[in-house]
Amino acid sequence: METVFKRSKFFWEDYFSDKKKGGHRFSIEEFLAKEAKEKLFHLNGGKTLLDFGCGAGELLIYYAPYYEKVVGVDFSRSMLFEAEKKVLQHEYENVDLLLADDRTVWEKLDTKNEILQE
Image 1 (cartoon, rainbow, N blue to C red):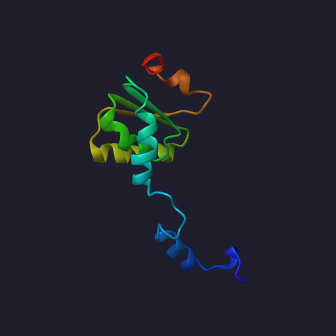
Image 2 (cartoon, helix red, strand yellow):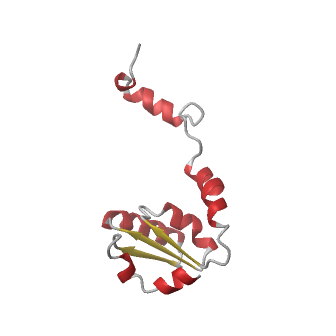
């Protein structure tokens, strides 16, 4: 019996390229459309979205058209650089990126009251 650890790189590339046998529920686009959109849009009246741990900005780009302001926070400068490239590529002017962690985020957010009240 072949163990999971002994399978070749090609086996895994093929396995994960096929969403049906790869065990993936959704592609990222499907996830955003079905799961996150469903949950976030139940927050009535929200004008600002805070994505803490935004990484390379996938959620920021997806939600920017739906909110007046989107704030992406991450402690990784390289991840924020990737997010910034996406924001510029899409020409979104309502997305702010902030380098912070869980200890410094509230000090650095100039709109914290606005975010919490909306």
